[in-house]
Image (tube, rainbow, N blue to C red; front, side):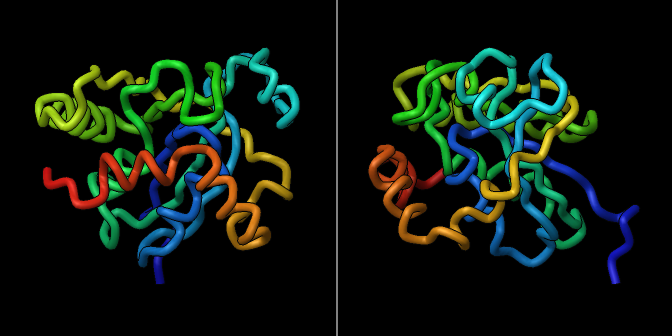
Length: 181
């Protein structure tokens, strides 16, 4: 049995948080993936406030995981392959600061690994444009409203449509699937 002391947190912003949960939510060692908001100035923001872009928050996910079963570096590998790391204006159809990508580190070790993987991605020449994903220290994470949690499970058809219509799926298929690092 895993105790709470063994579990760690990872926080990633990758655009629409509905699209970010499923890729992480299927592996042993991942205990929980929560949709929410982080990085802003308003306490307890709502979805409508964050969506307007006035709170400074980004839509994000917070992952509770067991690093002995699923190392942070593996989480980073999944994160990079679920986003467009070169988009400085948001992600896919979702535009604005609240949809920009970021890695929020919870320890010095996470910061180092995040920066190393970003540098590796930049030097891989997979993308012509620069990698613009931010790396910040983790701040308060506010869970989103309940109807946003596990959206892909609660609304599978709407989730699938969102991923396809947003341009995310086409981007991932073109730029990531089959790409060798």
